Image 1 (tube, rainbow, N blue to C red):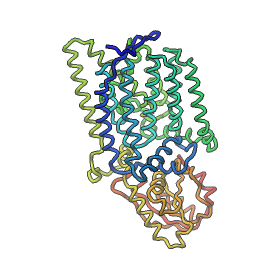
Image 2: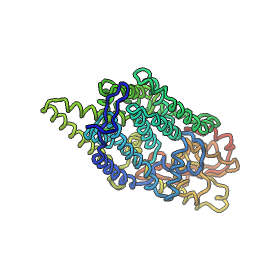
Image 3: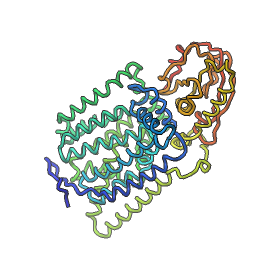
Length: 510
């Protein structure tokens, strides 16, 4: 049965089915419930604290991101000051939207009720795609914006409504203020559309008008980056180095698949193949080629395994449509076997997501045994220890004599530490500085700041920079992130030897 909206376009015979709202809503509501529970757990994540600090220092650009996340964080903190639950609500809403849009993409591909349901399950049972929505991060926002853009492109292929391309461009303009990954998508789309079709896509005037809007909207950020030496481009080299240390290139593809979850990985692989080879999906072949090309690019440049996760919605939808059609073509015994295997895979995938949901209390969580383990579970350990750090530094500051407190500033080793102090105790503490990541661009310590409380800074550097260096405190929380809230020494330093205006540019690092 087809919708009255169904139409035929040159070379395209796919018809659309009614939207399976009941099935989609069930999955979306359950997913929202899991996320709403998850965002109420533990505490601020380190990057969330940084977004809040950046939001209090509005700018057209930042060293490692655009202005959207800081502005969004500031808006939510204004609505409910100090509430990390409210801070995370936009991430939850966007993630649920991505689940719904994945089903709608499956519908655009000609998928009926079962295909739409399978597509939503594929997205909702991915631990990465779903549970990244429990924290307000650039990944959570960027991934969903890609899903919106790809839905617009897929729908344009079927309907040829050019307004969809303009909408995709407007979302792209917003995404450019989050991360600078989306240009890779459009470059790959242009190349693959010219090779596989529809070539008409790259000739549409509204697409180029949208591109002009994207460029104009990005100009303020580009000016900021230019004035500050293009730090966001330098972040690419930093990330590439991190991936080399972690063996990222060797394990890039397997780990990228695992981020989709058990059911998602199967749908992702089959969906990519279906986009490239399935006859009924032939008009969308360029999107399958786009995903493959993106994987190759991010693999070569040392990108992170989730950089192309925004394309997963399209691949999952295609995989769901392909699996349902495959089952329909099989003989009855085989059909039942495939349907049973798919159901079992879905149940196991649901179990995987639920096992990764933060049900445990803090007392039930085991401390990280080493830095590698903490890095793997950074989303958990990065939410602990900030009140303890703040309490220790605040107590040390208040124990200083009035003469010592006058003119003393705080300098931290990491931008997470600086952001935590800035969020949780800025009314009680003197100015906080850090040369780490984007916080280093928020300001240079004044040259007359000869006394500091140094949180976690290297002792050799401190003894080179100051006449007197004394350890006055220690932060070592049971749960926390190494180097941020675990094994952190707090120093009291006086007698500045080298002016900060000279030292700070050298000290700054991404």
